[in-house]
Image (cartoon, rainbow, N blue to C red; front, top):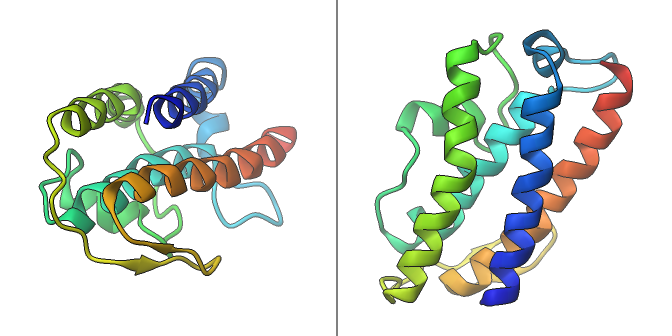
Length: 151
């Protein structure tokens, strides 16, 4: 799992740079031809990791039910986020990863509700969920690389 977490740490560092180097207005801008913005993608990444690893394991998530409702698959930005929301997302970027590392070390993931992704991959346990999560984060980071050209 060390490599999986190292890749995730690297991914989250890239996301942090977006939060630190783009203005609130830029983070909230939905360019023409896109259905979401930079901040939606970042928050979606955090929410999906929690859903894939914790929710499907029947364990409590570190994100609120409201955040899940606003950023789960199939949603789109409904409002401009505030600086306070950006700060919360920024703190969740690494706190969720650190807790996940600890929870894997403590072997808390005992059960899992299998899930087949849109790409056809069946996630059978929390370890596979973290591995698939890295793919998911890369997809959304690629989308963000495109969005940044237009904000």
